[in-house]
Image 1 (tube, helix red, strand yellow):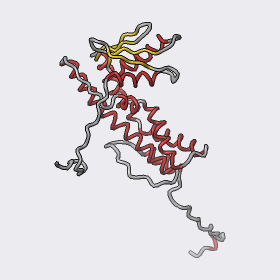
Image 2: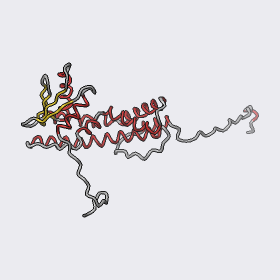
Image 3: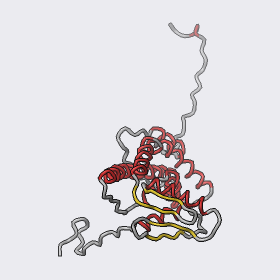
Image 4: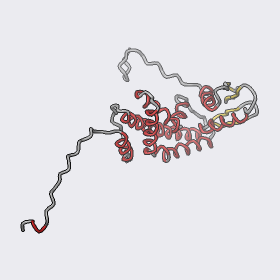
Length: 252
C-alpha cells in the first residue's frame, strides 16, 4: 500500500461522496420554503425531478419562488398547481447564471470597502450588545456571507456532477464552473478581510491578509485605525511660555 501523496497517510483516502441531483434540488427548495413546510422530491421515470410540499394555501407562490432559485442554478423548470417540475439544464438559464456571476464579480464582490464598513459596523454593534469577543468574528462572517448570497448558493451545489450530452450545454456548464471558481475565491477574500478587521477591532491578533493585485484597502486601514488604538497614548510636553520682548529692545 502506498501512502497518500497529499497527507502522507498509509490509509487510502475515501472519495468524497457526490450528492445526487434530487438532494441538491431539495436543499435549494428547502432554503426558499418556510420552516413549517417540508419539501419532498422524487425522480421522474424519463429524467428530471418533481418537487412538492404538503398542505394547501399559497403553494403556487412558493413553487414560483423555488423555480426562480433553480433557474438561477441553470435548471429548466415548469410550475404546476400541485408540484414543481425540474427538467434538466437550460442553455438560457445557464447563460443567465453566467451573466449574474459576472455581474457579481464586477459589482458587489469588487467593493471591498463596503465589506470593510459592514464588518466594522456589525462588529461594533455586537460588542455593544456584549456578544462574546471570541465569537464575534464568526458571527460577522456568517452575516456577511448571507449578505453576499453567493457563498450559500455555491455551497448548495458543492460536489454536484454537472454534465450534459449536448455540446452547447457542456460549454455553458464549463463557462459557469469557471466563473463560480472566481466568485468562490472572491467571496473567501471578503470573508477573510471581514474576519481580520473584526479580530483587530476586538483586540485579537490578526493574521496577515493576502490582497489581490490592485485592491484598494486604504479606507479599510483608516476605519480600523479609527476604531482601535494601535499604540499607547504618548503624553504631550507642557507648553513653553516665552516672555514678550519689545522689538526695540532686541539687540541688532
